[in-house]
Length: 397
Image 1 (spheres, rainbow, N blue to C red):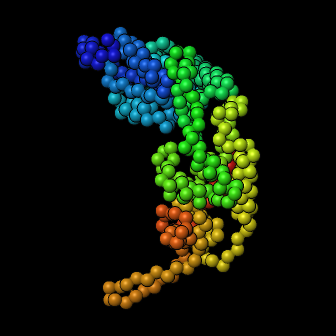
Image 2 (image 1 turned 90 degrees about the vertical axis):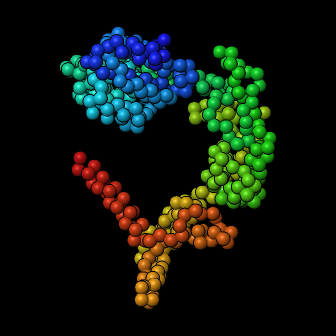
Image 3 (image 1 turned 90 degrees about the horizontal axis):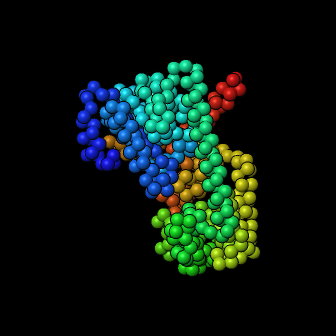
């Protein structure tokens, strides 16, 4: 009944117009909690508590799938919205199911609660009562509460990480991004709640061109750009539906899971023959080529560039759109004046070589061809000046 808005509104109408105004805030950390109706449970408890206290509920805010231990309050729209409305005097009380719904960051959340109190807002929890900030003891208890919440969050993370490690070690998929060459399939396995669990299997169509990518790197020395263009020309797209980039190809070549393993951030399975797309020798050869190519590129970048060019970044600036090195040169701009005469102005500019070669088989680039060196150099100098100022300030601290 307490989830029925009409029922709750009818209850609220029985309160006097001078009843304290309350805002109710709910939060769950994971999609699983959303699916298991944790928000309604919090809402029922908070609505019943507010009604019993004689508070008029003027606002309800719900955050779904927001981690209180990983996401700062400054990046949570609900907290920022509540702060703004509290500063405007739109409610008198902020009620939560438990105070850790405000967050679990021990170095931040106690001060979030204290901020509301300092702005005249009473802070209440249906389980912990009111948190006042009147004495040093109150401040200590406020900090200890969130220190404990942070500890519980850390313990939960450890238990979850260990469980995922156990599942992966057993050769089972635990969720997350599915790499090209694989797909999810129901093979009859069920979890402890008797729900079907998907397993990772080879997608033969995708696996064919994954093998081709490795072959072309080893046998033809094909670059990531060339391979990305090849896939795009075939009409293939990434999982997100976008065109392939060189970075997508490199991630595929780097993915050791193709040799027959399920690999996550914290664990890897034993060898699973049914998941092997590439043999170990092929994987190592392709990655050796990529590594040597990268080492050569990095070495070239370390070589000092000398130039008589008046631009600040000649030889060391790269196009953000296609990654190609840009050159600096003196460019002549011609302007036609009102009287019909032509005026010329020579000024330094940066040029994206690939943009200029777009129709000659060059790398695809959707950026502009020319950039005024004066503007680019000014932006870089401003950023460098700020860095040196920060270094100087740190030196004098």
